[in-house]
Length: 317
Image 1: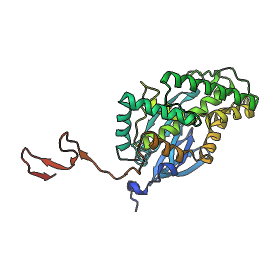
Image 2 (image 1 turned 90 degrees about the horizontal axis):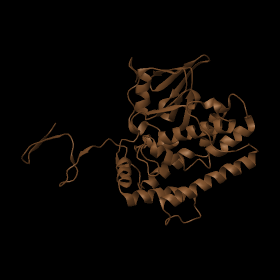
Image 3 (image 1 turned 90 degrees about the vertical axis):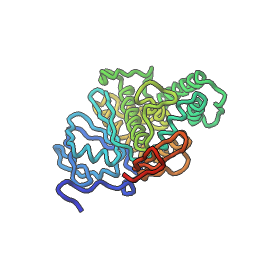
Image 4 (image 1 turned 60 degrees about the horizontal axis):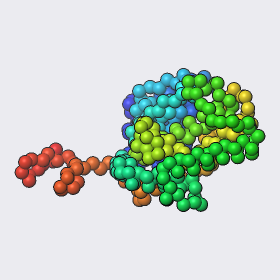
């Protein structure tokens, strides 16, 4: 039942699992409001209703006006938000994690805080790029060099297959329009992949800043995670768009739409959820129920919501 304040906040079991959601939606020059449990999106063409629980990430472009009520719904539904600025500059934001368990975050923090386990996870990520080779004995320096060679080879192969002129990757975050068509397409494709990666990481309750290969940035793990999929998704799409549309002024928009299609067709959300849990060694279903305990160095986990006294007596609070 609804009231003048909108629908009640949905319970966790009612929210669509992250792997089953729509990958992302992009809006620009629009106003976002809330009606019940849906986003009310209005622009010059009219109004549409978007059920909040089915969307993974919103890409909000120039001219978007968002109400407080809309942001509240976005946070409750665990949607990621990517604020897309002009000339390809992005700022990232997100609502509360869809998964209220801290198990994934604790596992990530433990793995990244130990040199041996951090290297092991990094090797696991590189192993995903080289499935037919054993990289378990390679150092981080050797792995970086091997990966650099692989990516350069992918660029050359895509250029040859599509006929797109390729020299090198150039990206000026302060001047998107100065780039060549292929570099514009690559920027747009990678940013869409970063947005989806970011959304999955935070929705699952992990930290976007605790990277294993990248470090020192609040999106370090986003870059780690997205790099696993560039060769299959963003790079081929970018070359295809550059070959098809060349100097078309809308190449960024066309690339973004193409990325949305390949995300869906390739069932990338399902893969990302599985891969994230595999990387962090959380192989069972994560409990989404709101459970909170108190930590004790000698007694282990203790009951929350209890007023403890100096003696053994305690009472509910």
